[in-house]
Amino acid sequence: MKHLLKLADLSTEEIYGILNLADQLKYERKNHIPHPHLAGKKLGMIFTKSSTRTRVSFAAGMTELGGTSEFLSDRDIQLGRGEPIKDTARVLSRYLDGIMIRTFKQSDVEDFAKNGSIPVINGLTDYCHPCQVLADLMTVREYKGSLKGLKLCFVGDGNNMANSLIVGGIKTGMEVSIACPDAYRPDAQIVQWAKENGKLTVTSDIREGAADADVMYTDVWASMGQEAEKAEREKAFRGYCIDAELMKIAKPDAMVLHCLPVHRGEEITDEVFEAHAEEIFDEAENRLHAQKAVLVKLLK
Ligand code: CP
Ligand code: NVA
Image (cartoon, rainbow, N blue to C red; front, side, top):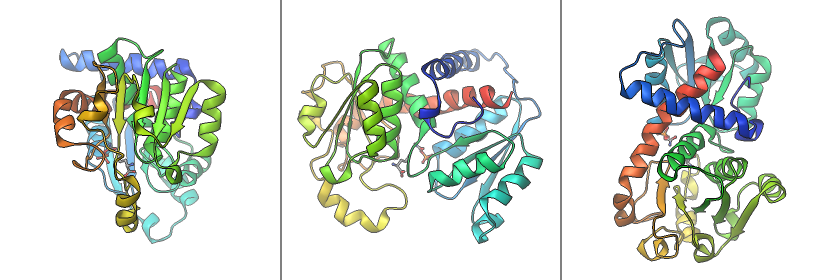
């Protein structure tokens, strides 16, 4: 494993290797056992979109591993004024030991990896969000004991989260269902791959999608960069909401996850969100542990 550009690049063994190390790092942190695996290492973090969790968990994670991090907003670095990715990659590779990028185009992250000489971590693109899903898998395993054979239902937009959940779920032996409007289905190539490699259903019927699910998952109707489509999306997604009624169709002990930030009253009711807040904020915490594992695997 040289980079984390998308989960499709990882084998099932590599995914479990990250999850196991994440569990170990979480245990060490909880018990105040130092784990300075990246002493002296430097991570750059390029953001062309907003972030709370990704930014702070990567920065805190590098500190806990004995390294340092540098926040690079596109408003401040020359990339935002048009310096090409390929030049930025070649320059930053001379200073840093690794780079995390949150941006719009998946091809920008891939171009950075191609032109630079340091590990690249995808901190979210329009196409996928691998770091989030590693934390999600870690959280499901904590609560349910194992992943294989569980059913995960994602309700809402066939967006970056849906794409990564399909890949991560199928690679770990879960059954995945995506309940979304027909016009907002996940990436067609990912859907095809998933159908060839595991059990995936894509349906516009949320009740069909949620039936007997072990894990219910949702995300915002309008992602970063889609602000102009807000009104249109509110119309298209009305009803694609995890509420108490839908939870009755899932398994009685189903857990609920959300990558956050949440729009209460849109993709999930306040009632269901708060009833599952413990799981959802454990999931947010696990970003830290899962990403520390990724950092150790790539930068050590
Ligand atoms: N879930 C997630 O990636 O959160 P941020 O946008 O706050 O980083
Ligand atoms: N789909 C959301 C995820 C945020 C973590 C977005 O891209 O804005």
